[in-house]
Amino acid sequence: MKKVLVACGTGIATSTMAAKKLEAALEKRGLLKQVKISQCTIAELPRKSPDYDLIIVTSRVAQDIKTPIVQGLPFLTGVGMEKTVDEVVEKLGL
Image (cartoon, rainbow, N blue to C red; front, side):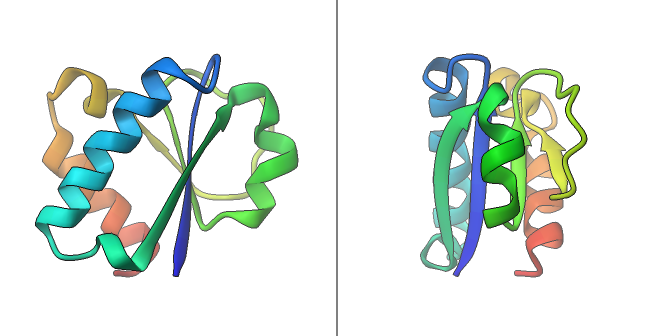
């Protein structure tokens, strides 16, 4: 099971939208059962990131995070979303 952490400023609004759209895209590709998606705030990333395989952010990250990061803005705008899902799938090795 691959673990994905979706982070935004408050850990509520945009991360929820991005997580739901990622879930739907992975379900459509038959991959959702292989992924566990969680949410947090950008401030929590340094503490939580080591426990995850991939991080999706909807805002800038100033901290030095070792876990691979994917920019999640396409999940909010819809522009380039399929390409971003492809990147997520590739980075997770699914």
